[in-house]
Amino acid sequence: MSGSTIVLYRNDSDDVWVIDIPASIAEAQAFGNDRLKLISCPALEKPWPHNEPKSDKARDILKSQQPDDRGLQKAISDALAIVRASHSGAYCLSRVAQAASAATGEKRRRSEITPDRAAEAWPGHDRFRPFKDGYDLSEEVGESLHVIAPPTTNLYVKSQAEVEGKMVHNASPSIANLRIQDKSIMCRIPPFSSFFLGDCSASMPFHRAVRQLAQRQQTKSQFDVVVMDPPWPSASVRRGAQKGQAHYNVKRSLWDMRQLLFDMDLGPLISADGLLAVWITNKPTINDMILSQQDGLFESCGLQLVEEWIWVKVTSSGEPILPVDGLWRKPYEILLIGRKKATAKGRDLDGRHTASPRHNVKRRVIFAVPDLHSRKPCLKQPLKRILGISTDHRGLEIFARNLISGWHAWGNEVLKFTEEMCWTRDCAP
Image 1 (tube, helix red, strand yellow):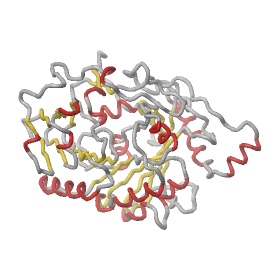
Image 2 (tube, rainbow, N blue to C red):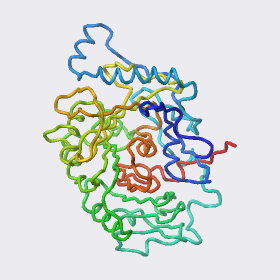
Image 3 (tube, helix red, strand yellow):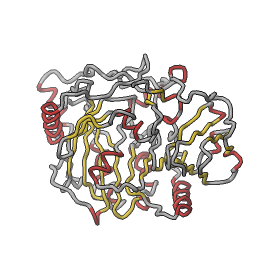
Image 4 (spheres, one colour):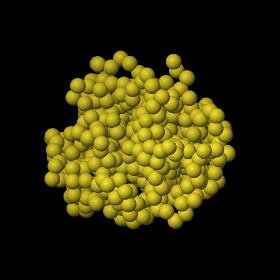
């Protein structure tokens, strides 16, 4: 985004950050001079209401049923003290928000983007007619790889099915416009980005497409950094689905989730010095699914935990949206970062689960005002700065809901926030 940065604060040791979520996603699109802002929700001004146990006895009973999170709480409290002493600015940038999409604490339900509320992001283009100079990808029937090459930057397909289960790569240094006629949508494909629109439970076609594109580009088929935000089981999301209010699909059980993650065969996708970063919820069973030394995902991929990043959700004035020591609900989510064991390095961190390898781990805290439901900050910039990822690195986001310039994206919602209805012009001077 022109005239602004996604990082509103960062301390000298890079372990305390304040990041703007919509801006982080917009920056990763590499729009250049195209001044576009991601449509969001109003920034939360007050903490969410909460129903913590009133009596000490009730608190003690509930606390005995949960893991010891005092190390996390101390890290957050220390980071809060640092940022409050050093940062007097905003905790988020100005937002273009939908009138009825304010973030509230009531089951965290928020309105999704709808066409009637969005500004037209591409003046001069009628969303429902073909490009005059566009290329019809439908002509490449049977192809498993579509490469968008200069000077072609306007493309269309008659049906979304024509790009499902295929790798679409923008080989141009410019944004490519892809119109999907049966959905009446147009999507912006960032420079040098690739997407594979398909369910992550069917991994073989994706692996095959990655190898095919790498062979064509004469580059490696592994990735230097892989980021994923899995659809962890959620009772509240399932209740929303029953009422037609769910924002995305989740797995029904941890066993279903485990099967999905392990069947994706992630190990071969990660380079010899590569990283895998996984967003998790605060359930110990999910933590152990990733970190267990016996049968965890990191162990199966030959990874060692090296960093733990804590995203603390705050109001526009920097106050956590829930008590840091809350027992019912937590104001934070965690990103676990593993590196191939041969090159893993780090520093000490206290342990919380005996099954999880938590030695030699660096912990960092990121403060960010929540955005639309399930949107995470795009961490491409912090990952490059902190973990020494080269400028020409290969990146992959799994379960993606938007694209990132120069990266691959895989999932059945990879085009969700690339649609023109999700963006509007930035009218700031």
